[in-house]
Image (cartoon, rainbow over all chains, first blue to last red; front, side, top):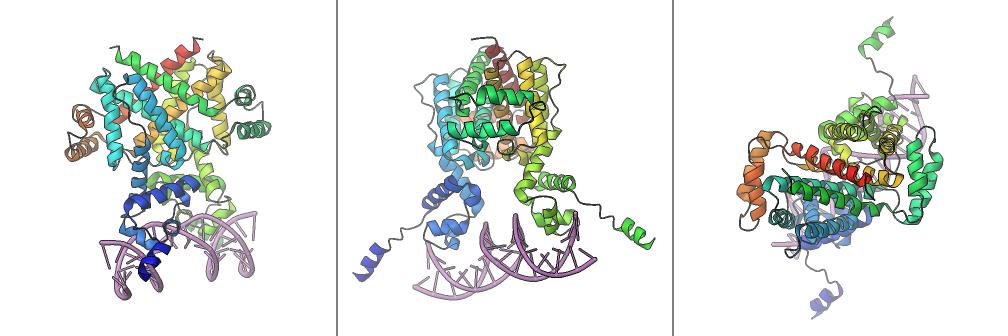
Length: 224
Length: 224
DNA sequence: ACCTGAACACCGTTCAAGT
DNA sequence: ACCTGAACACCGTTCAAGT
């Protein structure tokens, strides 16, 4: 009875790999990958840092698990949709996931030791191109082009020193003022005539570039 | 005389920002960004780690300098070439630079505090689009699309667990053997029928995707 | 089976002290 | 002006010891 009450007061839910990974994702979302230390993660889990090693081989294994968690959040391309619609939807979902977890843009576990969510996701994307009439070779081209674009865009977006339109305008004005205009005339023009225009948001570029790539893939599929 | 000889035996060239950055780039090229520690860098410069702070504000400042160094290695788009040729050449040069310095794919200083080489490079790229008949707005689209693609491709390439064709074949065979084929049929097909084919090299995808983007930009420029 | 405390070999960075 | 030694507040990870 007494011990039951004590357990209720100090819940100390059983630790496991999933809970460790989930807490680590929260920590990295809030402060970036460099804010994720084993000691800090232990604090958030009400446990000493060393206990984490009972559920995760080491920090690298932890980060691999985190990356797979992010891949699990990406909506799989739907079998019902036409290939272009399906890939477009999952690309938007992919970019949204990377925007929620900016640290994930630099991790890229998929090359070395992909987790189950990553494998399943890749399989479905490849299958969408194949069933959309792409040859095996052209599927490889398509997969590489689309994912390169998404990763690169997410990385550029993450490294911008602003996020809201107001911040953007303020930062752009400062940068423009610091810019020697004779030295960088085109950069100055782009900043003054485009970035500083009301309603500018770098995020809007995503769909423009994405559709450019998808349209290009469509005509590639139908030629040769 | 004696001191002159001593100076010859122990050259101890005067340290400066450029020499510090150059040594740091070598270190990061060899072992990645995590191999770059101030103590190790000091060793390579025959100096205590703390001396480095006389030439660099802190490690972040050092890495910013390194990123600008890499941008300086990228061939500027030539004024004589037609925009597509000029951007194509500089994109290949950009990707080569990122392949030489894989750590730079994850740095992206340009957003927050671009160095002089970065600014000059961006100005020339923007100018190439403008002189090639792109409106200011379409120049922004083009710049974003091309650089997103290049960054993303370089990141994917860097994270592959193989580089030579022999390694690729060996790794792909292992991965294919580990793959449950019923669970990931399309991934298995792509690996067996494409990646394992003799002559496969992921790097070859670069130009295919790049030309896709460039052709898309050309038709975007000429419509609306 | 899981958690802990102490310890090891590292980090980046400061500061007073040297030349 | 530049370099150094000692020190501080951290890291990831090990290992023996606890329950």
